[in-house]
Image 1: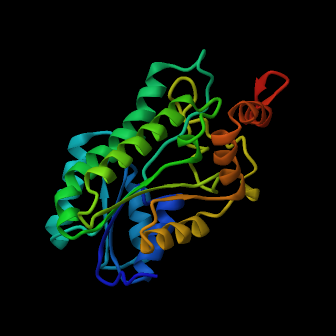
Image 2: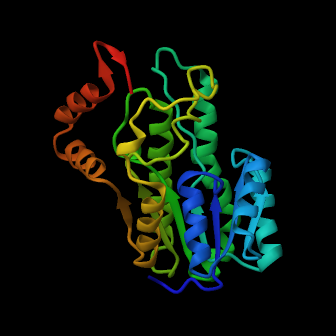
Length: 268
């Protein structure tokens, strides 16, 4: 594990799930951590839970460029620079293409893709100066389109492609760019996932008990950052899905359809 003592780590969406687990582990490693979220009460709870001068919490909606710019400016004003940016804030969806509203698709893209672009653009001068790290928390859905998650898949494909372009632009500069793709991980993302009308569905259609924990996922992510890996694909199912889709795409179509549908209806 790299030495993170006094490193300035920025994590979007740090009040729940993987983001919160990343906040906890980076603080334990001695880093100074700034995080943002849309819900002030959750951020207040986070601040009370860790009660640390090394934690800065700021309310921000990453789908708004002005919020992202202000967030990064607050971090730099507080600590002078940024070493690591983890674009973790994200939202999912669950609706068939024939039913989904444009509002749902736009909201997912605004948060998952544009939120990462806005924060990265604002933080880039500081990170490149420090030869730091930019991370995008993507998804297996960024390698394999998933039924009922068309907008989510599109946003993650876009994120992967954008980060790969940025990585290539920065080749040889010492600044590292990577994207990590968890499989199904225990978090609030499925409960908060948007339905066809851009409203939170409020429940998870998946068996959360069989998934990788957010804590374990965060540990893998930090290890990958330390080793400056190009990409990280997590869980056996996730790795199998990426492999199957690359080498046996028609078979992957069938298996993915069988997993998500039952008797012609989307059940997961």
